[in-house]
Amino acid sequence: MRRGAIKFLVLTFIHIGARASADSTCRSSMPSIVFLDESGMLMAPLVRRSWSVRGHTPVLRQRGRSEQKVSAIAALCILPNRNRIALYFRLHSDANINTERAMDFLEHLQRQLHTPIVLVSDSLPHNRH
Picture (spheres, rainbow, N blue to C red):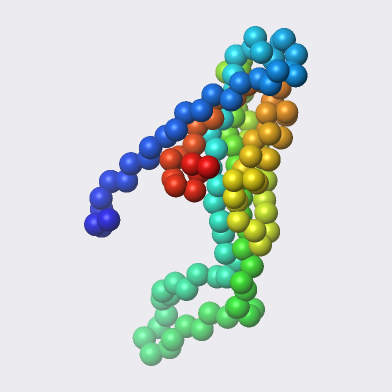
């Protein structure tokens, strides 16, 4: 992609209804709107440019070379009464967010919210499972 180009975010809307075992109040209630995304972070520091006096190269010290990583999955939820927004997240150290972890997170989220959810997620290839 050329520098300065506009990036478009394509959204996928999925309605996840109440399960058959749920009570009738759950089935008749309005859904929560859930915005879901995941991210990964490396614990190694980034190499950046720095300012210093001419002729004196700055020395930036760090403790070893860390190969650890943290993956996060988070959901921003607009609750059915539309008067509150809640943030739910889960961290995984040294693991990637795969389909199994994402579905486990969504199942726990739906149990926590006690409502059907409308899931809004980006349409990246790894989210289409």
